Length: 406
Image: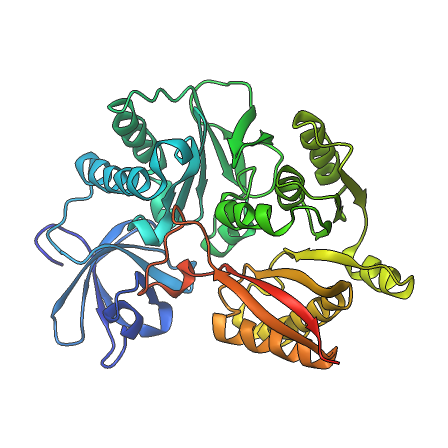
């Protein structure tokens, strides 16, 4: 046992490669010994096989990610001052990269990419939505929230309420129950936000994830100019975000498709809220069935947008996901008029940029289409990509012009 009574996790020789390359995770099969007693969720010191100090993190025997690192400095004290410094750095970064206009609604804390492993916090106007996915960080979530409110108050931002959406299945891997509810006093949980000039009503209690997908903010904005005066099909529309950006950008007509009745109801209400109901329509449909039907009827569009849910959430399922992405892009490409545009994306970090690019290329070849790349984008900068943390890079977004090979 070391002098501060923390248990000591010792790595096997040759292990900890991810940690040593800058990542924050230590996997169960990388650990040689644990010297000392601890409870799951406790902070522990980490040393290499030769006793070289690697830092401090929190441990959980229920998870294959056995230790998540807080700091590379083993002398770090994990207290309120530590968390206040972390969230201040995160908030200062958002103010810089987003500017005053776009920090009204943004991701404020992005887990490992902000050196607070296992927790994300989104800000919707004057409300915070917290998602805690690991046992160790769960102990500190209320402290982190209070520190963030304190930091924002210095910029004149008063947070009127905090809601927790820790209902993701990943918590089960940590031995944690799913949970959602208020942190502190109750408040009205339907919040109107403005993004790219478009108003949305966000339901932080029942919406997907934390209520809204903030990561596509600037990708949606990029589509406004592409869609002007064009007929647009938006697949997997969810709350209608890409469709509404198309309509706001001057599209001639827009059709948004989603399998969820609840999502389509929200999308229609958002279209009405923005005075776009005459241009932007929404239908409940299974996109995987609807696209072949439209192809069979000879329908076509100037712009097709594909924003599917992640086809894989594990490395083992990647092969099947490749097939799924290839098929959906083949169908989308068949619906694009010659000279029109395809926007397509993947939100799985297991589907790497290289793999996604290869899959799209195969899809285009199969349907005899040439692709002229307009641009390649990733997630908005409030979802920063930490190069040493592969899991932080998940969103890949392409815009192509589609030209018939003949």
